[in-house]
Image 1 (cartoon, rainbow, N blue to C red):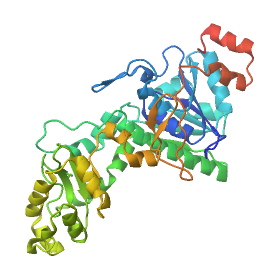
Image 2 (image 1 turned 90 degrees about the horizontal axis):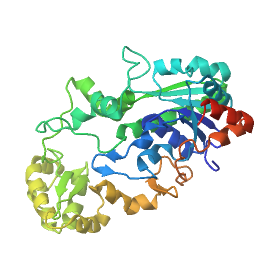
Image 3 (image 1 turned 90 degrees about the vertical axis):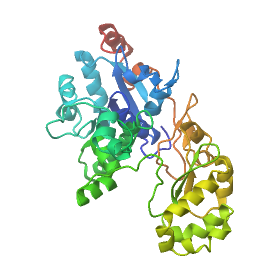
Image 4 (image 1 turned 135 degrees about the horizontal axis):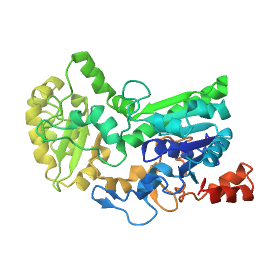
Length: 403
C-alpha cells in the first residue's frame, strides 16, 4: 500500500460485479487498503464470469475479475449470520470508508445501511453505487451498465445510425461500470478531503444512470436547449458535412484513420503535402476556409481515393509529422502494443496479468497495480489484525460465519 496518496486509508467493500468494485480497485491503486467482503461460500459472482462476447477465459487468473479487484484483500463472510455481521461491524470500526453496491432492501436486511455503520463508526464515509440513483420511484431497482448507463442514459440511441436495426452495443465488458467506478472513487477522495478538513463524514452516491448522463452531457445539453435528439450519421457517411478534415478514411488494408482538424483552413496545406498532393494547396476549390466548407464533398472524395492507396501502418508512419490531430482506429489488441500507451504506462503488469492502469497518475507515475486476491485469501490475516484470537477465528469458521 506504500507510496499512494491514500496510504493509511482503509476501505471496507461489500460489493459485487463490475461497477462498485472498480471504484475499490482505483482506491487500491491509489494506496488504500481495500478489504473486499465476499459471500462465504460463493464469493463475488464476477469470479465466475468466463465468457465475454466471443472471448473466453479458462482457469485463473481471470482478467474479468482482476480488472476491478486488483490490489485488494479478500475476506469471506456470511452476513446473514449474527457473528458474521459482528465481524463486519468490527472491520467498520477500523475503516475510513464503507463501499457497497447492495440495494436498499439488502442493506437493511444485512444491517449494513448508513445508520447501522454510523452506529459503530460515526466518522465512516458511506459510499454506494446504484443503477438509477438514491431518489425517485425507481431507486430500489437494480441494473447493469448495459441498461442504466448505455441504454437509458442515451448513448445507445445517439450512437446507432438510423439505418441500423436495433442498437449498437457497448464496445466492451463493464464499459459503463468502469467509467462510473472511477467517478465513485473520485467522490470518495473528495469526501476524505472534507472529512479531514471539517470532521464531517459524507454519504457519497454515484449511479450508472447519472454517470451515463454525464458522459453524454454535452449532447444532452444540446438536446435540452434545441428540443431535438442527437441522431447518428448513416453508416459510411463522412464525419462532417462541412469539413473534410474531420471524419474517417479507409486505408488500403481495410482499416481506418480518424482525422479531427476542426480548423480545416489551418491544416489543409499540411495534409496535402503529407498525402503527396501539393497541387491541392492552391486549388481554387479549397483556397479559403469558406471554399473548403462549400466543397467538402469533393475534398472528401479526393482524400478517400488517396488514403485508400496505402495501408494504415504506412499512413501512421507518414503522419507522424502531421501537425493536425489524427489517430489510427485501433482494436483492443492493437492498443496493447501502442507505443504511446506503453510510454505512459497505461497498461501495468500485476505479476499475473497485464491490466489497464487506472487513469489518474500522481507525480507522472502510474500506480503499481497488484494482483487481485484469491477468494477469501486474507480472511484470517484481516481478523488477526483486528485483534481476534486464533481461537475466535476457528470458532467463527466452525459456525460458518466466515470462510
